[in-house]
Length: 299
Image (cartoon, rainbow, N blue to C red; front, side, top):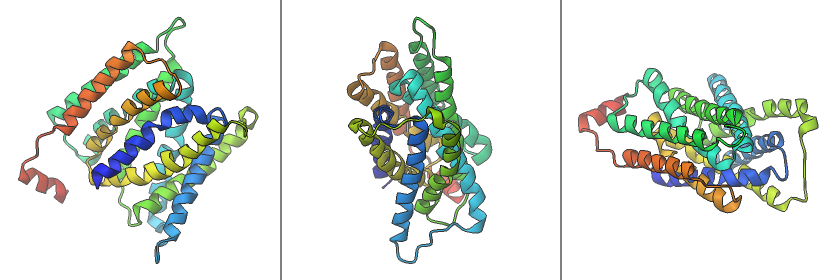
């Protein structure tokens, strides 16, 4: 079941990078995020309503934690990511965003008391090398897009911290309901930003490709992907769960090259080679001794 959930996450988020570029042909990034939060959250809440006897409100002691996660994962992370895509392109932003394993693994040590083995550390090193290669690849006649790189890294750091926090918090409500409310609670901040920057927003209803991209972002990249991702976080260690997402930039860069004709240079190839090496280290990990597994389950 974990592999099926991961496959859903990999495809939904990997393909979201070129489709995000398409979406911006129809609506601006502020409007896109607003519609994604409201649309995906409403869709998941309606699914919760169809389950007999299932409550649709959180328990009182869960609201603060869900609100915190919402601000991190559904507000700061997506706005930083989309802005990064606009500045340095979907493929490069995909790789920079997936520095999240670096942040999640480092934070998981003091917060979750997770231990980093040699393979994990080597995988993190390859991930850092991929980031440096992307940074070198964004250098052009006018120099590197510093703001775009910074936004891509900020997105990864925020999502990594949110992954650790979601692992730390304990909720009694079903995962689907927690996910729905994270999206819905992220809607008012998006509305506030939209009202402030209304003069800079736009809507092109005749952009058919852009509207399809928006549909994909709402249904697949948000509703379906997050509904699959949070159960994965609950099943795996935070460092392993975040490292599993290194598959996503491979799909993101490849699909961007095909769908939006984004340049795919030698630095991108080298960065992807580092990412694939990191994936191999995680996938081919030796099985832990029985005593260690039992101790981790007890924790």
